[in-house]
Image 1 (spheres, rainbow, N blue to C red):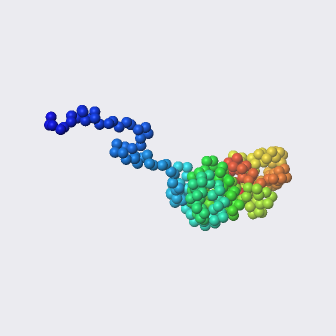
Image 2: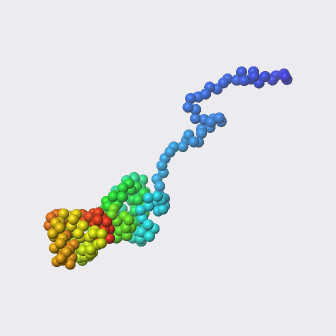
Image 3: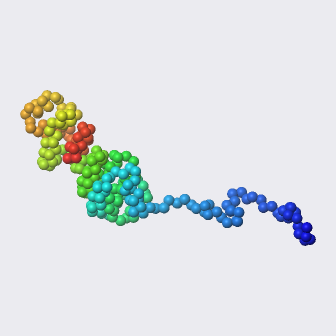
Length: 245
C-alpha cells in the first residue's frame, strides 16, 4: 500500500455516521422532493370547461336537437341569472357565472351536472315560469321523456276554472275521445270518485263528457288546479294530454 493512503475500512471507521432524521423530507442529494411540495387544490373551472364536460357526458338529459334550440333562445338577464344560480347546489358552478348574464343552454347543462333527482326539474320549471321565461319551458317540453318531471306549461296553481276557453276546449275535447284501453275521461272520473251513474248519463247526453268531469271536480274540490290535473294525466299514462296543460 503506498505511503500516506488510509485503508478504505479505516476511512469508514473514522468518518462520522449521519443518523437518519425522523420525517426527513430531503432526497439523497438534500433537495426537497417536489411531490412533497404539492398541495391539492381544486381549481375553479371555467364556465366553458363545465359546459364541455356536460354536453355528451353520462346522465345527459337533453338531446342535441333540444340543446341547439336552447342555444337559440335569448340569454337570461342578470336578475334571472341570479335567481336561477340559487338553484345550483355547487358553489363552484355558481361562482363560474361571475355575475354575468347566462346563456340558456349553458345554465341547463350546469343544472344537469348537479341534479340528484329528476323531480328537481319541476322546481326549475316553476322558477322559470315566475321569471316569465315560458319560452324555455316550451323547448323543455319537447324533450318528451322528461315531460312527467317538468310539470304543466301553465302555472301549477292555476285553477282549472280560470283556464282560457280555447285551452279548456282543447283539453276537454281531447280527453272526451274514447280510448280503447279506457284511459280517457272515464278513468279520470273513477280517480275522482265520481259515481258510475253520472258517467252513464254523460255518455248518453253530452258530446263533451270530460267537461262534465272537470266541472264536477271543481264543485267537489275548491282548489282544483292545473298541476293536479297534470299529475292525474301522468298517472293515467296520457302524457299527450298532460302536454296540453
